[in-house]
Structures are given as structure tokens and as C-alpha cells.
Image 1 (cartoon, rainbow, N blue to C red):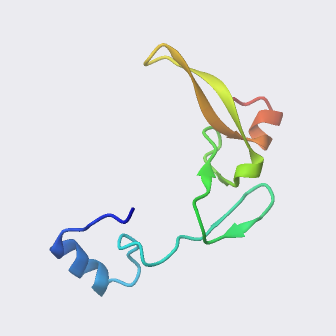
Image 2: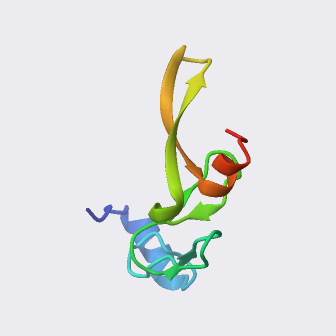
Image 3: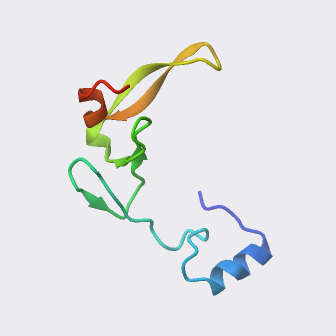
Amino acid sequence: MKKKLPPDFKAMCEENAECGMDGARPSPWICHVCDHKSQTGEGVACTVCYKTTCGLHLKHVSAYNPASGLYELQPVCIFCVGAKLH
């Protein structure tokens, strides 16, 4: 679903070619594991190294959240899982 922008923001976006808030331009990304390039969808950042990774190279691992006291599933790339950094 495309977000509606207030009129003043929309005018600024139309004037600024670098702005991606209007949803007209896709945001390219590259997987740091396999170098897969895409302009569709979104890459997901690893919660350990914060690098963009495609869905094929992410595992969801259980991690303790001290703020809530619960375990949560977090996306971690296969490099960080293999190095046991999670």
C-alpha cells in the first residue's frame, strides 16, 4: 500500500529527484553473501552485522530480549550463524 504524503511533502519529493518517499523509484539492494542484486522487494538486514541479505541466506534464530524478558526470532545471516555471533 502506497503511503499518502501531505501536499507540502509531495511537492518537495517531486522537486527532489533523490527522494524515494513517493514510492515511484525502487530501492536497489545487494546480498552481501551471494552478491544477488535486486530492485524488487526489500533485502533484510542481519541483526548481528546489519548487512543486507537475501532471504535464501538468512536464518531466524531465537534470541533473548532483556527488555521484554522473552525470546524472539531474529533474522541472522549465514555468516554470523556459522561464526556463532548470535
